[in-house]
Image 1 (spheres, rainbow, N blue to C red):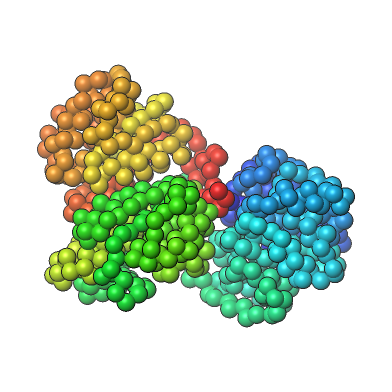
Image 2: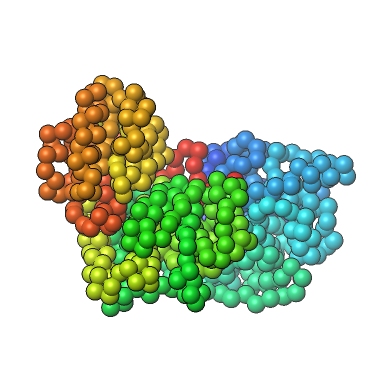
Amino acid sequence: MCGIVGYIGEKQAAPILIEGLRRLEYRGYDSAGIAVSGQKVTVIKEKGRIDNLKAEIDRVYPVGTVGIGHTRWATHGIPDRSNAHPHSSMNGIVTLVHNGIIENYIEIKNELAEKGYVFKSETDTEVIAQLFDSLFNGNAVETMIKTAARLEGSYAVAMLVKGFSDKVFTMKKDNPMIIGAGDGEYFIASDIPAILPYTKDCYIVKDNDFVELRKDGITVYGIDGEEKAADINSINMSVDAAQKNGYDYFMEKEIYEQPKAFHDTVSPLIKDGSITLPFEFPKGFIKNLSRIHIVACGSAYHVGMTAKYIIEDMARIPVIVDIASEFRYRNPILNENDLCIFVSQSGETADTLASLRESKARGAFTMSIVNVLYSTIARESDGVIYTNAGAEIAVATTKALMAQLGVCYILAAFLAHEKGLMGDDILRNFTEEVLTVPEKIKKALCSSDNTKEIARHIKDRQSMFFIGRGIDYPLCLEGSLKLKEISYIHSEGYGAGELKHGTISLIENGTAVVAIGTDDALLGKMISNIKEVRARGAYVIAIVKEGTKGIEEVADKVIYVPCASRYLMPSITVVPLQLLAYHTTVLKGFDVDKPRNLAKSVTVE
Ligand code: AGP
């Protein structure tokens, strides 16, 4: 995933582009660059972080009030200066930046090379520039349309075109692009935080829009070259959502925003003890619903696994959970009685989007649980439930996951009630308890000092285990992922009952094991599993409900969390897991928000 910015107005473009790129640095940061249209188009690009680019801009200082910028997460070509964006075409017709992946770039590159085009980079992006150059007929919009017709894959492109120095052009397919409408100035960005400081009035560019931006307005053309309406929306998000607000890291801020994220997500769905979803299933659909597929990646997949336990037990509907990169290729058996649920913070994850399209093509009813408004997955689902977690900047998801869990609780109860398995009174009691969860998350946040102390004991470990049973098991996978992705400590999430089938051979003196035991019905078994690993020298950190007896005798450290009904515990238990990963990473001195090799949304396969 990469970050794109653009500006056209009366102010010098370079500072605005740099500031915008800084706000999008979480989308990728292995190289960055800008192009400013002045007397001529000046391109400055550097390997590494935005600061490297800023130093070069301070030296060269490109003058001009029109420009584009890009921060890269490499897909084609190593992260170096030659592969950094912007890329210019051989004849200087176009200079552009791109987010996405062009799947047929080799074929086009060979075709252009035969026409004499010389390429300076390994990127698929440069192929777009050279193709545009080869098709240019003096009309930038027409050339964009012809260029797009040849491209297979996903793209969001912003470009400066020769002869149109007072304009910026953009087009997109399957990648986000937003236009901000200012007073005598317009902005382009891959994501809202880069626009918010200037304006809340935005146009969400749609697939196969071809847009011309001027400082006094925009014109949107369709694939047929005809002008089309540009509906400007006011985005209700504060700038501080994209700021740290006094916290050291976005992740820390977002961990502490979880009570609000949970509340803002679930409360609109609950009215007087009953549940109202923001969309309607087709008439009779729930009655004939035979199977639910939940498809997602990473942490969102762990949410799906958690939802399985809850929906199957409450609504007695079979739930199949898949990682999207497998689902899309395993020829899934789907029909009109299937409900496919896609969980995604960004709403742009390539594998999840492809799985959504595959499911629609096979006749299933599709709904999504998404955090980013108007994102592609949200727009293409038959129904969407937005998590109102606000912009999540840290690569490691926390508040969005918390909000997704809230939606799953609501959905499970809704389905159980619709199937006649949950009466009105039980539903009222359940929804009332759901509304108490934010207070319990707040209490769980008080375990921060304890988890910080524990982090000191684990920060130098080479490997760790997270074990649990029942609804705690998906949290083991999530706790393991959180620790791995930001502290770089290898770990495994494991079913506690499964450990003895081989992997327990890895437990030796000093092996750190986080044991999660919040399910009363399984606690006895968990204590047995803790004893098994302890007997082999493990250092055990137990996470249990307040009031749990007999745990301090078998664990080295204990984190107590507030009590709630079994199905609501994941929202409480996940908090110390997040804090443990956060504190460990801070103690190790790593960048919590921008872990190596990762990006906030994986919009490529
Ligand atoms: C979670 O901390 C990771 N950043 C990653 O696993 C993420 O959950 C996954 O890439 C899915 O992203 P999405 O929710 O935006 O689809």
